[in-house]
Image (cartoon, rainbow, N blue to C red; front, side):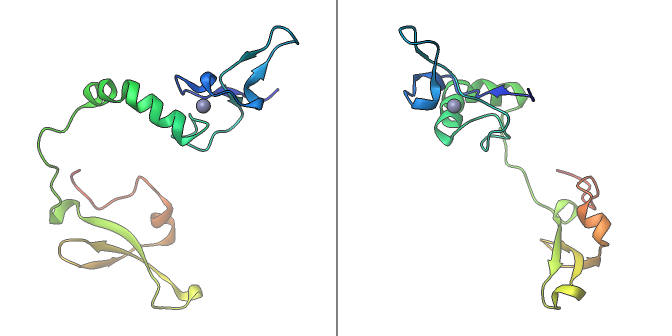
Length: 125
Ligand SMILES: [Zn+2]
């Protein structure tokens, strides 16, 4: 059997659906969904409802744990670079480019750099 995992929704088992019923006749229970793949919350939740239930229960603790913003983040010339594709040209000749959201400057970018999620010109958050 491949890697099956449980939906992390704290109340997933309280949804009385046919696919959650487990156990022999006379001893049936509703159980948390278990699948090889989920589509919500980075693959941790079977539905938006379960994802929201998790956040309602644990969200404040998670934000406090990982760092609550207490002042605004600021976009400057140094961290405003984003990768883009120049669709003015036809598909075969499309150009990958860096664009700066503040200065509007453009710089060349190779397709490999475009696909490398670690590659950036930004020097701050
Ligand atoms: Zn669920």
